[in-house]
Image (tube, rainbow, N blue to C red; front, side):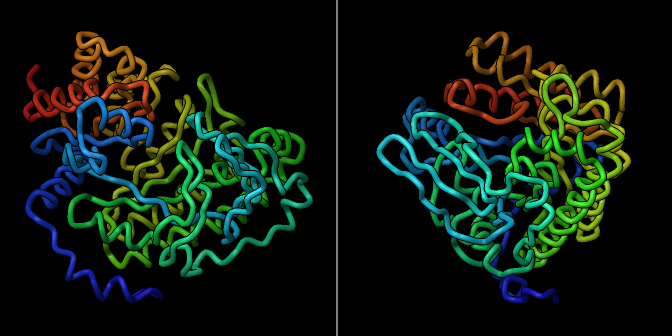
Length: 393
């Protein structure tokens, strides 16, 4: 038994029906680069999209796209804040809230805007960064207790006192293949010191920042171990979140990434695999310069492979064959047009990359309110109709 025994003791009470087991088989088969019964489909949905989707399709207030469409996998997010503490409210009125989080980040969330704004950072010098001592990655509060945390609480919505992560996992386990998740080092630094300081300090102090990155990497490797243990066998997969690129290129040199960031991604992926979990890496932007590295690490699928960053699933399949698992890449900007013929060509074109397996259908990032409920409904029906093996369209 692991250090957290309670969930493991309850696992036998969380029965899965034949449909859920079929979804799990579908995911594992696809990520083994074999052809399941049909192409798996899921996505990441903004709260603003879900509200529009309910309104557009005249659905009840509690309707959920994961359940409504019986999607094939879902990801969960524990408390990954370096410091376990409640939000410090600096300002709040009917239009916005400004808080300091467990990353020491000061965030402004305007309720009318889709995403929050980073205003300032508690850690504003490299000396302060080097002196930080993060809270225990094995602290039970991260996994078993409700509380504020930045990643779950401050995004396209604003939520205080997020529910206990383990309770979320247990609630989803009977119905979906459930993935845990962890951020990697650069994703932490973006929230901890901001992208400008991060890139500036890497350029000015590469060795000093390398030592910091290694400390952060060990912290999140330990968080991953603690999270997987806390789940007590209820996870089927693991997502590693980490943006290291923008539309045209990487934020720093591939060699620097390989020296300091890659080893920790590799360690997390290897640990998750040792526990029998599928591993999906989510990294935005044009990551083409290091795709071969992710393949060698053993990542089961890359996500989101943004079309807007000139990545194309069909071309990637031709280039890398079935060494690369693909999760995403359907152009959300085409979805936003609502043009059924354009959307049909986009969906069927990307489905052609699913020949031989190795493909999960999703958008090339996430589904926001620019996409209508009717459009997403149409996309799911297209994938379900034309994504059955053997593919023939």
